[in-house]
Image 1 (tube, rainbow, N blue to C red):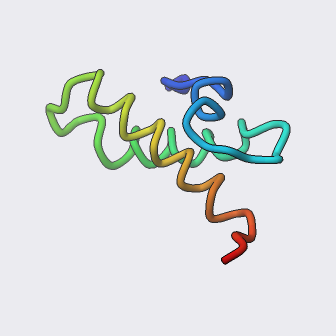
Image 2: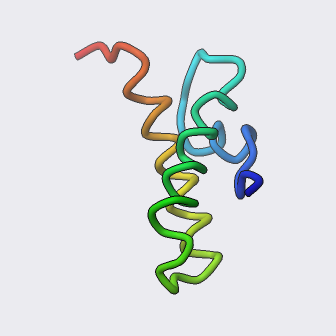
Length: 66
């Protein structure tokens, strides 16, 4: 299935220096499709899960200063 979210949507909720976040959307889409798509959740909920999962992957890929 095609991604439910765009790079622009992910970048709107996470600050990152990564120019292209599409590589983080791909695994988020895969997880949602394979593990959640057939559970009866609404498409809006699946979209939100995919969005925040992709943003999480972006965030953990960068070192965070403390």
